[in-house]
Structures are given as structure tokens and as C-alpha cells.
Picture 1 (cartoon, rainbow, N blue to C red):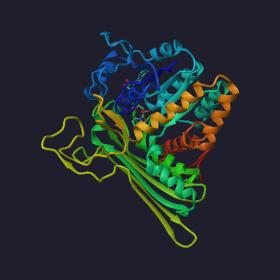
Picture 2 (picture 1 turned 180 degrees about the horizontal axis):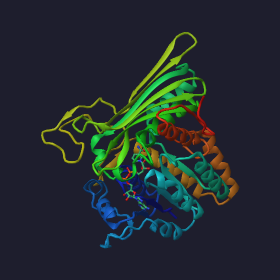
Picture 3 (picture 1 turned 90 degrees about the vertical axis):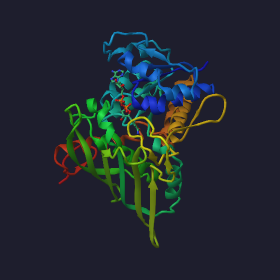
Picture 4 (picture 1 turned 135 degrees about the horizontal axis):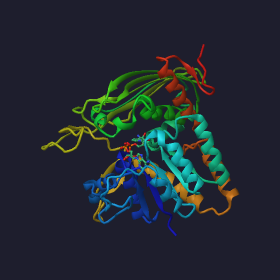
Length: 407
Ligand SMILES: NC(=O)c1ccc[n+]([C@@H]2O[C@H](COP(=O)([O-])OP(=O)(O)OC[C@H]3O[C@@H](n4cnc5c(N)ncnc54)[C@H](O)[C@@H]3O)[C@@H](O)[C@H]2O)c1
């Protein structure tokens, strides 16, 4: 019997990465029914009518909650609880809600005995992460956090080479991820506000996670400065941030983030990392251009859509559709591979009847460190917690763990 997958939240990440990856997995016969639960039917109609998804997956549909036919524009923020409660145990729930809503939704899914995949950041505090870990371990359920940069081959290459001692000891690094300006006009303006999130919490966590993923080092303290700007709807967000993260070997990583890469600039964003290392007999160096500026296209017509440019430098790495015949399009890239890998781990656990066997499997996932789990990636929540405190104290440095002011 194929397991079902229920996605909670039908916004951008569901459209751009999660749903097409799930459609592909269903095409390959790996999973069964796919459902998406939103809080309004209109959001799900947009998803169901997506020209891109319909072109890539002709004939594929998801079950919509609320149903697509519902014309009432009522907002139903609690609907996912009913939808999850009605699932048979040991299926898969994917959480794709705004950051501050992940905690309740993950617990709700675990208490209904579902394996869980959640978009990053899993939660915003270490206490919540601990609670999720306890609940999942108790029930022998997978909780996998979707840090898709881990499944970019260049991250896996760097990880092996660092761990083989080829680079030396990490000393200084600088990372940046800037989304396009038009993001300010999206639903982000309703939730990525100063009281709940900021550019670092939203996207900076990718590079903190990646530095740990590559080196195995743990962050020890954070200082975060932010610049407030208004969204078009008048809400305020920290739309530019600058972080300094110290690591347990004394290394320092600077991370800059923003919703401000010009709409007219080529590519969907700009992002990358440089790391400098000390070896026994000389320095080491690593540079990843993660937006990958190797392709240059100048189209004869201007493509539609926000942030689309006539001169474009598309990245083939994260998520693209390619025509491999068969009447549709096939998703490729580390965005797909990440979902595929995490779903595969959930399916492996779902095939184990014995809870002790599942617990042993969870321990293997924790120890291998390829999948980010609550136990092996809690440093991310600690960093976010300290970073939010630092932001509120104008960039003062906070140590991780018990959040106290560094002297
Ligand atoms: N690079 C990445 O890994 C990446 C990229 C984008 C987003 N994300 C993460 O994905 C999450 C969602 O981001 P997004 O870009 O899709 O945002 P979005 O604002 O486009 O979508 C969120 C959706 O959740 C819906 N929602 C809110 N409350 C709900 C509820 N109670 N029940 C059902 N639906 C509800 C909203 O209506 C919206 O459609 C965030 O946590 C974000 O950080 C990760």
C-alpha cells in the first residue's frame, strides 16, 4: 500500500518545490494520495490551476482541503487539525506554513502518529525543538527538516573533503543570500514581520546549517544587526540583516541576508559562501557561487512573472523542469533530491512495525547527520533564538544555550 502525503500550507514553497516533487514521486509509484490543506480555497485553486504544474504533470491532481469548489472566502486556520486527525497512522505530513506556525502543526501531526517533514527553520526556540524530539522519539516517528542545500552535490563534496582533512581548520567565512525585491509584495509581508522573523531567521539559517553540515562544528554565539523597512502593506520587517556567528573552534562566519536583490538583476536571487581555513602547511579556501552564474540567456521576449528578466542567468542546480519524454516534464535539482531523500526515510520508517526498530532507525538518522533532525540540528534553533535576542539589543553578542548576554 502506498503511503499518502498531506502538505499543510499551499504557498510559494509548496508550488515551487514540494508539490512538483511529490507529483514526481507519485509518477514513480513511490507514494499514493497527495493532499494539500490551506486555510482558503482560493489559495488551493491558484495551486491547482498553475500552468507550470499542469504542463509538467498533466492529469495529476491533489485532494484539496478546503475543496476547490468552496466559494466561501472564510479563513480556516484550524482545518489542518481535522484533516490530520482523519489520517490513518504512519503516513507522511509535510509542514509548509509560515515559520511561527510550525510548532503546533508538527506536534499535531506527531500526535496523530504521522511521520513529519517540515520546511526550515523547524521552530524558533530550542525548547520547542526538544519537545518535538521527545514526542517523536516516544512514538518512533521521523521528523526531518528540509534544508535542501544539504542535497546540493557541492555541499556533499565539501563535507567529504573537509572531513578528510583536505581543507584544514575552518577559520573565517562569509555567506550571503539575498532574495529579490519583489518578495516584499508577496504574502511575506503578512508574516515575515519584525515581531516574528527577519531576513536572517528566514534564509540565513541555510548557511549556518551548511557550515555545520560541512565541518561538524557547532555555533557558540551570535550577534545580529538588522535594518527595518516597511513592506508595501505598511508592516515592518528586518529586511536587511548582518550576522556574526562564532563556532566552537573559534572560527567566525559572517552572514548577510535581505529581501533586496534587484528585480532587474539576472537570476532568481544571489547567494554563496566563501570559507578560509588553516592547514598544517598552508591555507585552504572554498568558494561556492550558489546561484551558479554559469548560464547566460538573453530571450527574444520578456518572460512573465515577478523578478523575471529578459537577460537571465538561470541556475540549473536548485529546481528545474526538463523534458525527458512521456508527455510531461521531470523536476531535477537538489530541491527535488532533498524531498525525495526525506520522503524515502519516512517511507522506510513507515515500513517498520516494531517501535524499537523505528527508534533505532531514528538514532541512525541522528548519527549519520545527512537528514537534519530535531536532535542533530538543534543548534539552528539556538542560533535563531540568540539572534532574535541580539536583534532586539541592537547587535549585542549572545551566547547559545541558556540565552544570556555575553560579557
Ligand atoms: N529556501 C527554503 O528552504 C524555503 C524557501 C521558501 C520558504 N521556506 C519556508 O516555507 C514556509 C512557507 O513559506 P512560503 O514561501 O511558502 O510562504 P507563503 O507565505 O507563500 O505560504 C504560506 C502559506 O501558508 C498558508 N497558511 C497560513 N496559516 C495557515 C493555516 N493555519 N492552515 C493552512 N495554511 C495556512 C498561507 O495562507 C500561505 O498560503 C516558511 O517556513 C518558509 O521559511 C523555505
